[in-house]
Amino acid sequence: MPPKSGVAKRREAIRQEYWPTEDLWTGEREAGWFPVPRSLPLILVLLSSKEISGGKDPSAVYLDLLSRQRGEGIVEMAHEAEHAFAAGYEGKRAIRTWQERMRILEEIGFIRTVKIGNQRYKYAAVVHPTAAVQGLRNQNRISEAWWRAYIDNKRASGEPTFEDYAAESPAA
Image (cartoon, rainbow, N blue to C red):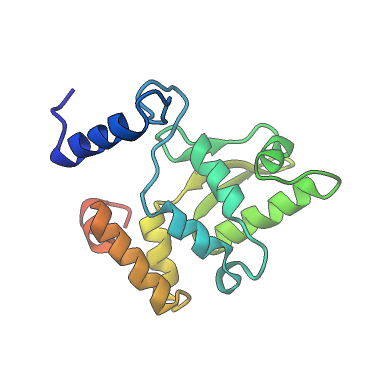
């Protein structure tokens, strides 16, 4: 394990001072968790905005897909009803509502999908969020206020910009 940085040491001291007996989430001892960009909260806000989704918020569907990919960026879906429930949809319209949100995510460039037989969404590829956001930016669909917050967040967290990502990715 690499040595702790100064920030990590400071936060450990804060933890010991204020919450020495609490079982805090660190992800260190866990199986089944997934890495996400630190800009994810902003991305979910963008997805839920009426300008992007037209009032049909696909952010819970996107979060479910992110949590189910296991490092390859691919989600294999056995039962659409299971995905619909995980995204918060219940009842007679659950699958249809989930499918509508999947369609939105595909239309705005956050996922690519494959239909097999009668299953409209058998496989989903999760597009790198930096590339998907840049696609919306190129279409002038993102407000300047959101864009500035997003870029500032990426800068503060050390996430690569689209230019950094494109320079390293053969698919960009």
